[in-house]
Length: 84
Image (tube, rainbow, N blue to C red; front, side, top):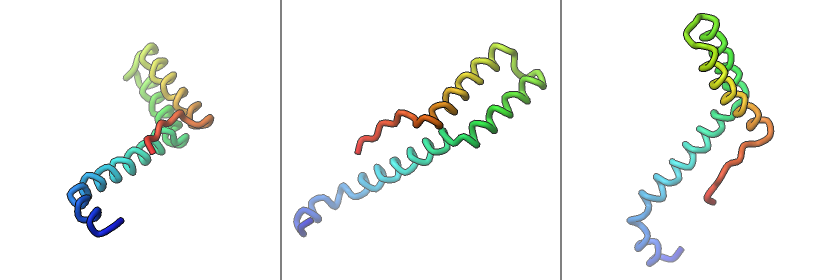
């Protein structure tokens, strides 16, 4: 990058920094979203809520299906869209 283009693009530096941070946050969120250990812990908590009567069977089954879909995606590789 030349001196002139560096000076002209300097006002965009904060925008590029924010975009970089947003990408890092998205990557971290996706890693946590598809972490099998986190999903298993959520399934265990869901089972406890059902056993304690905090959820009815219909709510339990809907949430369990959602979590199992995420677990399957974690094993097969989620379809991620990157704009890079």
